[in-house]
Length: 252
Ligand SMILES: [Zn+2]
Image (cartoon, rainbow, N blue to C red; front, side, top):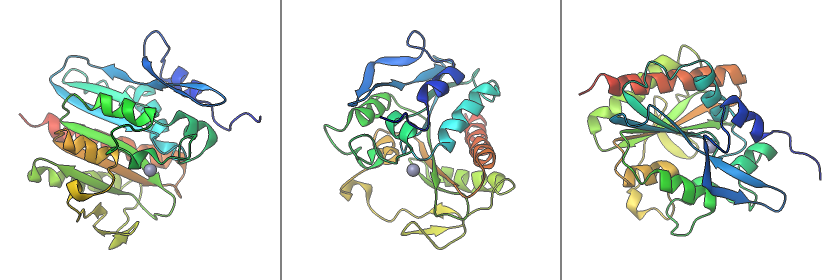
């Protein structure tokens, strides 16, 4: 058996996660070759404002995982952790991350399975984290086909729709925005996806819709364009996270 191209343990060591301090002991994923830990860590625990930032549910989209490493390694969290409780899920599909596959070891696209009552363990883990209410959830993705950055957003407060525009205004100085009228088969305007379906009638839910279902005020799914170098994708995602947290920090 060849060793996989990526090593999730390197990510955990960069995040200074270990079985003692960060890895969720109750959630691990057995595959024929290896048992993977599903990681969670929290900064600013107990603060009133709560955000969840997750990455790596699609294993072949490593820029989200790299973004969370950069957020921690470069102390980007410091200006937020006096006000925010920040929960991080740095890699929701560790098998996919190691082998560079979108799906998990069973060939399942985990971000299609949040409506299932008995989903794969990675999804059950993410759903358990969403049991408590968040003001903001951010999921980091990337798109191989897109010429630029774009995002999905949904939330309980229509006035927060402005946040999507605000994020793209910041990101456009780092990476161009995908201004197509149709992205990935859906309508879009100015880099923001237009969600036409009533989410309750959908056959499947991604993590963001489950987050919305659980009452999150604003759910963001952020898509960097894979055609740009890793450091540019990371910088674009970091700018988006910073803009989103700042947006709510200014509110009562
Ligand atoms: Zn993705």
